[in-house]
Image (tube, rainbow, N blue to C red; front, top):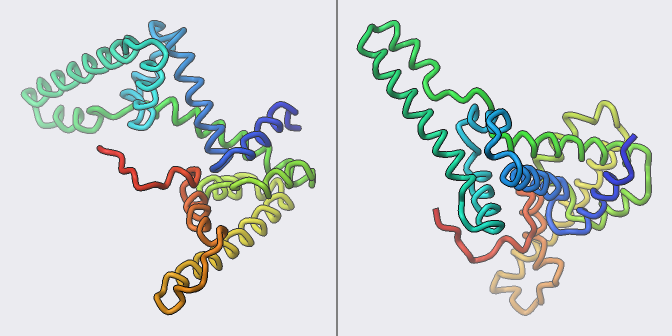
Length: 243
């Protein structure tokens, strides 16, 4: 049985643009990184999973920096984590170099384990665990045919492709009615959007230039990209992010 607060949080996310599970999962990663920076950056056992993963992934490293810079200015936590990691990698490379001088079998042994992370990015793990919990709640509520949840879902941008796939793989067997409802709803959405996009394409043909493109036709491509990426439609602009 899902907690009322969890259900309310999911319904609230559905009132925001983009995939609601992506939104909640990202927020969980932000809270985890923020709490770590404020409370545990100097605690070695707490920091160990980050060290075992050779740091956060690229996306969550950027999030780490953004959170620390927006909260405090000096990137002290970033320096503490990545100085430790730089020293660790340097030591591993030195030991591997020494092994190469000793013999071929040591070289092969070193190459198999050299710089192989013991764990995954902790923020990615948080995102995946949060997503799974939210999907379980969604499928359970739809299975029980709770009108509040189905109504909120219809008014939302819906699940992205990745989270729809994960939900169906993980919960269709346990919640078959909920899964069937989501499949039907997604199918209808995509068909409506495809029809609008075909009209958008047709009306951009010179022959049909006099026909006005409707707001729904103009927005359909953004909704479809939201399904494939989870991102809010407003994120798709002319702005290019530099490497």
